[in-house]
Structures are given as C-alpha cells and as structure tokens.
Length: 136
Image (cartoon, rainbow, N blue to C red; front, side, top):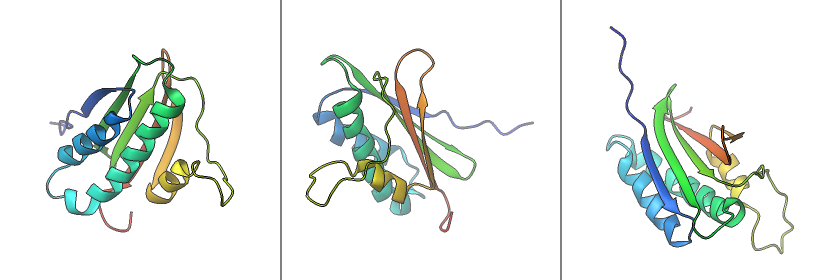
C-alpha cells in the first residue's frame, strides 16, 4: 500500500501589511515540532519576504488575498506564496543606498531552490524549499 502524503497546510490572508506577521506565525506553528528548531527561523524570513513582496507588488486591489501553501515533499518543506498579480518577480541588484529590493536575494540565499510560476487561472506563485536534513 502506498504511503499517504500529508495534506498541505493552506491559508488565505488579506493583502494588508498586518498579514505578514500572521502568515509568519501560521507557517511557524504548522511546522512539526521536530523541524521547528532548525527550520523555523528560515521559514519565518522566507514567509515575511514573500508575503511582503506579494502585498507590495502582486496585490491589485485592497480586497485581494495572498495565498500560502506549506507541504513536505522530496526531503524538503516547500512554501508557495501566491498573489493575483501577473508580474514575474526577479532578483534585483539594488545599489547600496536603496532601502528595498533585497527580498528575493534573501530568498535565494536561504532556499535550496526557488522558482516563480504562473497560476492556472490568474496570478503568480513564488515557491521556495528548505531541506529537512542539515546539508541539503
């Protein structure tokens, strides 16, 4: 009999700045206790950066929502943050005086892998993974 996979954790938050800390807390609390000490801080940063970017750059209207999905697969925990925007997030190279533009640089340095995918109907998802074991 095949092993039945876990059901992914799923949330929708309003596209408002107060949703950043709510999303961060929800993701941290959903990690299994065994993985929380090692993955909690990194997932906190990933969640904060991705949700902030989705709110700033992907939300089109005040009543839009940001969707998060967290699931284990292939030796990693994966986080997808989706918004209704049609833009394609990309690594920026801000100058030293810039006060923003470093979010995806942080995601790129923390995550084992990450990508941007269009959603089937409308919007964009950024997906990032952290390994379940030390060393990838």
